[in-house]
Amino acid sequence: MADTHAEAWYLDRGILHQVLDRLRAVESRAELLQQTQALRQALADPSQPIHHVAATPAAVSVQAIFVLDALEQIEAAHTLERALYYVRRLQRGLLTVRTNTINDINLNRWKEYTHIITDSLWIEERRDRSGTHSADYWGNFIPQIPHQMMQRYTRSGDWVLDTFAGSGTTLIEARRLGRNALGVELQPAVAEQTSARVQSEPNHHAVHTSIHTGDSTTVDWAALLAQHGQQSAQLVLMHPPYFDIIRFSNDPRDLSNAASVEHFLQGLSQVAANVVPLLERGRFLVLVIGDTYTRGEWLPLGFWAMQAVQQHGLRLKSIVVKNFEDTAGKRSQKELWRYRALVGGFYVFKHEYIFIFQKL
Ligand SMILES: C[S@@+](CC[C@H](N)C(=O)[O-])C[C@H]1O[C@@H](n2cnc3c(N)ncnc32)[C@H](O)[C@@H]1O
Image (cartoon, rainbow, N blue to C red; front, side, top):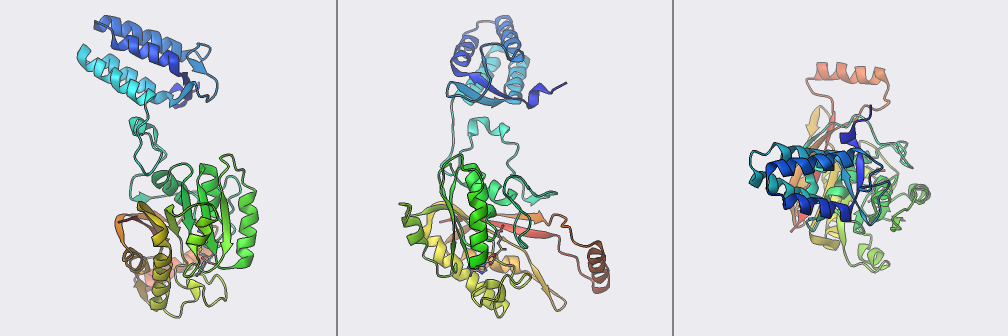
């Protein structure tokens, strides 16, 4: 049998107003219980006029669990006064929207956002392969990263800048979520391929998403934004090479070809210096990076990169540690690394960082 609690409902706004106003006017607990029971019966029957079959302007979209939990709480209240308090809260949750200035999350219904992660340790076993996302680009990030970041730190129609666009994971997610996005990628061939892939993702929200060939240390973000009548952006995503772990090209401007870790960090710092002025004050910049291992030494590249970026007028808000999902890597390779780790006294990389900064 289907679980009603997991259903999404579209409830008629007018009827909800009437029912909840009536509930608020009851004079006894018996009367209250009578009315909540009647409401439960109507909700349990999809043919009742309170139900719409799809989202319409006249309907309120809500997870069934939100309403059913609230009704349970109202019915279990020991006093009429307490029950009426819960009725008012349900009414507010259903019929009014309360957001802050950085996202579209309706805080009156925060319990519904179970898909939004708020913990600092992420174990993502599987990459989202839906739509035009492809796992082919070596060194890409999982779509869940830009997806989560845009839901937390942008509103519909906001502008997102991706300084290392690669295969366009951010741009595809932006398109799906109704955010505008501009990406810069150094390699022309990659940018061209990405552009085609991004354009093939349906654009239901009619947003602008484009990739530009360029060097993020010098690209003119202001000019790119100005082409769309914008002076600033509301989120920046940075997913640079992890120094030389993967060499992306032969281009000397490619940060994966930096002559040393110091040069890499200088380059990254320059990318931040170039983009942060375009970020709106109070808005967020996200840096995704891992550590590296060289000549028997673990180099905390992630934390060095964090410091290189933070100095550009940013406040550190969170550090998320995310696992590397299991790649199709050869089993023999994994075993080799395990053997090396046992011999060499180190641990095999299994995590990377998502640093979240707010512009001061
Ligand atoms: C870690 S990948 C980003 C992957 C991307 N997040 C995705 O999901 O496909 C880093 C990218 O930065 C590009 N890159 C390296 N140096 C750059 C620079 N100076 N300016 C712009 N892009 C650069 C590389 O070609 C590579 O595609």
